[in-house]
Length: 278
Image 1: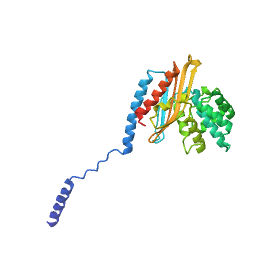
Image 2: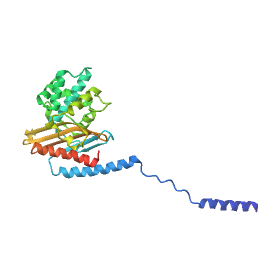
Image 3: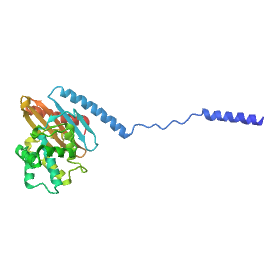
Image 4: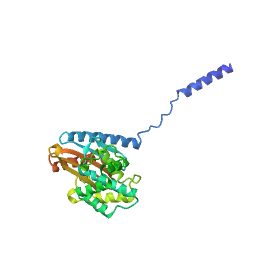
């Protein structure tokens, strides 16, 4: 009897414990990283829509943004190829700097004078001189490979080099990357030249900057004979400030006028800032 009673008591007691409600797990929401990623995805979707709507009303363009602070890259038609016009001069400058580094020497006085004219004034004769001194298209192509450019084909007529906005923001990033192939002196010289272009050429990327921010830029413009003299208009550069560190490239062609093309590339750059909120 005692055994039966004990057994029944044990069963009853077990039933009591089994029927008690279990504690609910502590609720966990999304992490800050997940929230930021979701917000960025919304921004990208909205920017895609805005650029697509704008692109339907103007000649062809592509735009890319590389945010150094977050590591995020955005591109609209990023792998579409365009002729560079004078933005190729940034590639020539980078190759000059790499070549001097390889020989463990400073850029010579003559090279520096040519580079200043090439970047600040977009002087074509100075560019042709440096292009030839460096070894023409094959040499620039080798430098591009070292800089990670995979979608750029250098032309013997340097202004007809073909590239993408994805490659151009990669190049801009390499000009400031402390772990990249360019040393501190080279990075400083590239910044100095690209932040002091002639006032008449200070358009494009800088239009997206706010008061107090620093900009670098190199623009390209060319009425293309193969396109009924319609304009190629390109702009590449960087915007930096307290909370901003981005590289931007806009490539375009088919414009009826230079001023019309400038308006398009500046609008595209501004739209990226409006929606990505950098």
